[in-house]
Structure formats: structure tokens, C-alpha cells
Image (cartoon, rainbow, N blue to C red):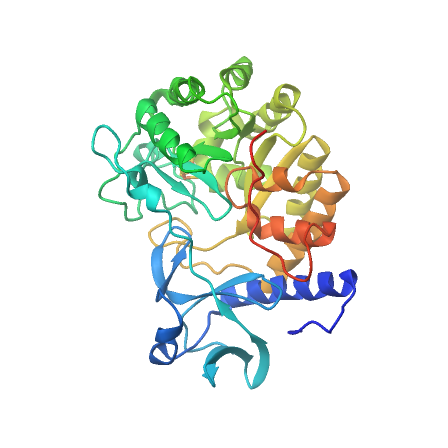
Length: 398
Ligand code: SF4
């Protein structure tokens, strides 16, 4: 599966790329063994960012067609990385799979700049690999106080940047946005966070976008919010300047929603109300501009895919990654499904999303797990040049 022939057809390249994505899903689950000493001189970092777990020992690299893969360091895995004649090679057991290229996260010196109050830009926002500015408005979730946190979520237990404030001020966010815009970033903006007491996110999110739009009218951004009790509130986000909205359902099955996300189910009118709110939001923001995040691997497979079909048919882009159990959460110690299960979800979901005519940009402009399905979507759509799939970058603002 490794190297392309001298002039492969586009279909062959697409097939090879999809096989690389399948392999990347396996690597993510099984991890990879390697000798740190052997590869140290070939890469800058010895850790990889791991969802909600900070930095862990591991490797991030690109496969021959550009697909990015990561694997935690693990002795007990079929995958190994060896260096032969200075070249890093990926093996499965004794079989050579590919020559790889180490991947280093892009560094953004602009994040070290200071705001007028002395805080660093880094403490307010991050820049994701696709160039999106990502703001976490609150560093914890008020559902904790009621014992109603979502069972998979580690927002209230994970370590935090000591510099981070619990709640960001809209003026700080707008100032940090301005600094990164001037440095050429900011083609898309995302604001999310845990529940805040008394549901004050409406005024804060609106203050943020209004403060940004005092200077930048060419703004694209998504507000990730819980379904509001009063659906007329949805229009206020659009009027204030957000181009997209997301309500993260996390699981599709109605009963599982109550079990996995007790706070979301009890505080926001229940599953039906969340779905109604998504559908009402499509009327306001338009098809492809309303999103939901699901956690891939919690629902039964066919239920999950029915959910993707339903949401797509209503114009809602459903995003998902792979369930990874976190320490000190309600699902600690569980296993995520087999890689083949995750592959099948992503493969069938993207077929559905292609059928409903979403665009690549819409597949990325959501609550944050765009690339898991986004890259499969791009490959199937033929949305790449030559025989490599580059890391997706949001297009310039009009
Ligand atoms: S609502 Fe659920 S998923 Fe969102 S931050 Fe709170 S516990 Fe986490």
C-alpha cells in the first residue's frame, strides 16, 4: 500500500489514500514501538498532543500520500518504526509498510505576543492545524456542580495551562483575535466552552463577535452552544455576526443521550428540543452552516449512521472523532471500538455527507473534529492535487 506507481490514475491514488487513512486509524488505536535514541536526531519533539490528555510520548508522521498519523509509544503493538540508512520506516510485524516523514506541529510565534493587560495571546486562543482560531470561553463546565457532566468529558478533570483564566473576557478575545488577524491568521473562528452558570454565554458570545466586528466585517465563525430554551434566541447569534452555529449532541440515540449527557438532557429541554433547535438553526443560518458533534463509538453503529443521515437530510453537518476514554471521567477504563468499526463509521458517514452535497469547508468549519472525516471526504471528492493530500487550510476570507 505504500508507494504510488509512476503515473497512477486518480482512482488508484484515492484508493491508496483511503488505505492510508485506514492505517492511521489503526495506528491511533494500537500505538507504535520505537527506540527513542534511534530517532531522536530525526525529529524535534518527543511527544504528541493527545486529545484531552496533554502531551504523551509518541510519534506524529505523514504517510507517503500525505496522510497524517499519530501513535502513542507502546511496546505491545504490531507497528514499529525503525531507522535504516538514516531513513525512517514503518513496519507491521516484519512487513515494511512505508517510508514516513516526521510531522512537527507548526509553531506560531504570534501566540507569544502580549495583550494590553499583559496576558499572552496563547492564554486566550489557539491556532489549529487548519488555520482556525479556537477559543475556549470557559475552562470548566458548571454541570460538574450538579454531578451532571457528560460521562466521556474531561473538561473538569484535565490539567490546565496555569495562565488560563476561568472565563475569558470578550474584549480580551477580540484583542487576541486582532493580533492574530494582523499576523495573517483567522480565516475561521470557533468559540466553545463548558456550561456557564445561568447560561450567560449568549451575552458573552455576542459581546465577543460584536467587539471583533467593530474592526473586521469579513468575519467567519462558529458559536458552539447548548440548545437554548427559547429558540428565538438563535437568530441573535446570526444577527450579531456568527456565520455558523453548533449544538453538540455527542450521541444520537435518545435514551443514550440522557445517560451519557445527563446535564444536556435535563437542562435544555431534552433530546427532541436539541434536535428541534438544530433544525430551527438551519432555517436561520442555512444548510451546511449548522453543525453538531458526535462521539464516534458510543452509539450502536446503525443508530449512529441513521443519525448522520437524519441530520444531513436537515442540512446539519455532523462531525465526529473516535471515542477515547479519559482518566477520572464516567467512562474511564472502557475500550473504544475496534479500528475497523471506526473506519466503517467514517467511510459510510462521508458517503452520506457527499450525497447531501456539503462542501469541504463546511466539513471543517464546525465544533472541532473536522479532519477525521474531512480528509476522507476530500479524498472521495477528489479535492486534492497530484498524489498527496495536504493538511486542509481554510480559504482566504472574501
Ligand atoms: S456540556 Fe458535557 S461535553 Fe460540554 S463541557 Fe460540559 S460536560 Fe463537557
